[in-house]
Length: 167
Image (cartoon, rainbow, N blue to C red; front, side, top):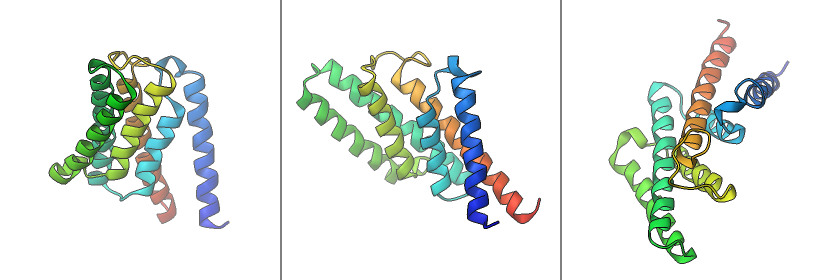
């Protein structure tokens, strides 16, 4: 069987297992399937190794922190569309500038995924940006979902790497 087909089938089966876990035994956890898969994609599309793993985790969380800060600033400053847009643009610029200063948050894709996922989850669900309860608050729910996905993706990539090498 072609290696890409083997990999696709293995990843599909693992994706189904993750979906089952999050819809079944872990449903009360509040983890979001789409955010777990987004975190998985960040690590699968990037570099390998411990440094890449840490950069993906830190970048995802940093993006979620900055999106949360923008959401909070928008609420505090009145919540108009203009204020919220300015807060989003400023926070995203600061989030990406942080990558130039702090090596730990050097994964631009992770920062963007963390920011967009947190912003989208909060906006689509009309969630309270001041709520930090796990499974309800945008920051905690998305940051932990992304980190779960990054870790899962890293473990899968390691396992598939070992499988390709024969053990």
